[in-house]
Image (tube, rainbow, N blue to C red):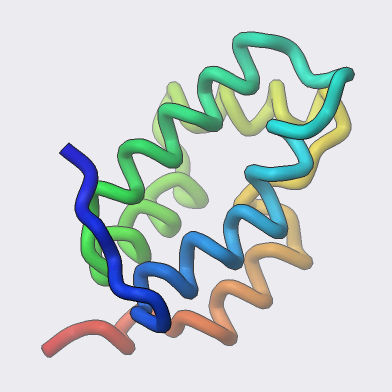
Length: 104
């Protein structure tokens, strides 16, 4: 079940950033494959169920790579889309949402 995040919350800011940088270009592209779009939708669903700390951890786990995330990232790259791992996304995410910022 997805959480509803308040406007202006850290969660909303993280998702807005990822939508702009990674998700929306894929979802709005007629060139993106159906499986790629489905994978992005699944990622969005999983991330929106998390709080900000969980979202940041999810991002860094995807960058570190699991077999599934590495395959998915390779497919994103093959189809010409930005990924979490791309320098422009990675550095801006790190700057905006420092890894330990949300620890209490």
